[in-house]
Image 1: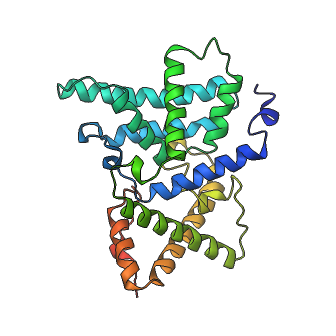
Image 2 (image 1 turned 60 degrees about the horizontal axis):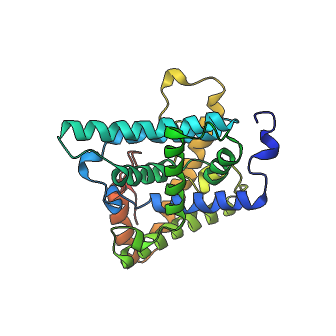
Length: 274
C-alpha cells in the first residue's frame, strides 16, 4: 500500500472536497468550542494529555500505510484512555466509560484538526487487513469515525450551548475567515486551498507547536519562516477585520477572543483598536 499510496489515497475529487469541508468546519469550531460545551467534566480536563493526544493524531497524515495510520489513532486514544484511568483512580471516581471517552476524543480531534481526516479514515477502512482491524484497534477506530460523524453533523443541539449563541459564534468565525481570505487576495498571494496554503486560511494549528528545539533540522528553517509570515498576515487581517466593525459587533468578538483557549500567548488587550 505504501507503493500504491499515490493512486489509492484520496483518489476521488469528492474525498478532497469532504476533507476541505470538515477542515473548514473544525477551524470555525476551534475559535469558540470549550470542554464544557461537550459536557467534559473538570476531572478529565488535562491540557498536557490533550496536547499529547493531538500531537499523535496529527501524525496520521505523515504515513502511507494503513497500519501506520491506524497506529497514530491508537496512540492518540491510548493517551486519552490513560488520562481517564488516572483521573478515576486519583479521585476515586466511577470508572470512565464510552460516555466519557468519546466527548474527549471529539474535543481532541477538533483541537488537532488532522489534515485529510475523512480520506485517512476511508483509507484505513478500505485497505487495512480486516483480520487486524479487531479488538482494541477496531474500538478506537470506530470511536474516531463516530467523532468525525459528530463533527460533520454538529449544530447547537449537539452541544450544551444556547442556539443563538452558537449561531453568533459561527458567524463571527466565518467573518474572520472571509476577512483573512480577502486580505490574502489583496496582497497578491496565491490563496488556493491546497495542503501547502490552507495553513493560513483554514487552520489555527501549526506543525511545530509541540516540537522541541533539538528536534528541528536545518531543512525546517524555510518552513518555519513561511509559517511565521502566514501567522503575521493572519493576525494582521484579524485585527483589521475587527477594527472595521461597529462597536456593537466588535465588543462580543473581543470578549470571545479573550476567553478563547489558543495557547499562543496572544493577548487581545494588547491589540491596537482605534
